[in-house]
Length: 445
Image (cartoon, rainbow, N blue to C red; front, side, top):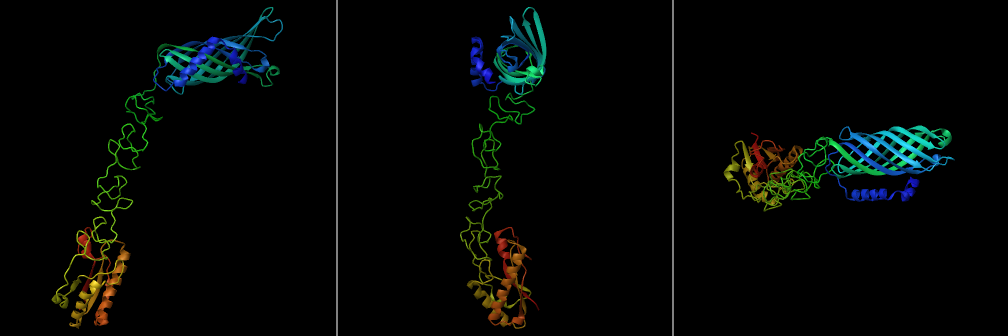
């Protein structure tokens, strides 16, 4: 290879001009549309870097004739001649004739077409001394090059091939082959009708069989799969995307902008609670927060920190419920709901606001010594069943202990937690959940 580069300085001026033209076109070439002709023919010139065992050197000139068998495969005949300086004494001239038949593979078709090719043929050495003597050598070749189409039927062609020609071991470094390298520059002239190419219905340069976006508008830049760039991966091409940088998994409209149907600041597709009320505070999944578990979401709740179990209004504030009439407490036919019995959040400790109503209950039970009751605790459906069952049992025990401490005989009282069983109303609304969080007295006999 180094020998070939060194000899470029001695190449003909017209060959140097062709090389300069090739490089200038290649420097600005981009993939484009070109219908390859059925046949190609053209001359070439170049340099042969002969195997060192031959002790010869020279340039080569010749021509090619090819036919395109398919959009990406062709067959080509190559003929060339090189008049060389011979080391043989008394030889007036020596000419090397090259003739080969190659298969040519074009992996990419367009204005710029790289190719690889290889085949078999012969090298014939013709020596003129006292008479003409010839010697034929079988060869095979492998190499590649580049076609740059200057017009629909005219291309500059640059080629570099290796040729391995049969030889006796004494003159070929014990390998049985000469290794000759040939670099050429030439022209290709197209003849005949255009060679059909694989269909490309949207003309984006990617054949339909490989095109994942087969209806790309004409002139739109595409990637190797035939799709316009989409940097944020939202399914809308950058050229049409009015909202670049959309988060992954967010749903977008035709303009590439994300939607937020419930207006909570969390985009649809990411939002796992898509019907959040207006102004409610949300967590990282888009679901509303209810820190005091009163059924009114933070952001809407005007009374954050309401004790667990306290009935609240639509603003999350405790409702003013009057204590039950004395007659209602004194006469327990079967069961009685105790109003205004509240506890610390997550605890069974009674709040002071519960003391008055329970003192009245104790007085009523003392005045009716034959009545025995069960103190029953109930919860709403928020939280696990096991947790609700445990806390309602502890709260029922707290109420029983309060009544005992105020003079009711322990034998007349028992306590039981029922968890979220026997709801009085739906657990789907704040009002219903407030009614289900309660303490009842059930008459035993």
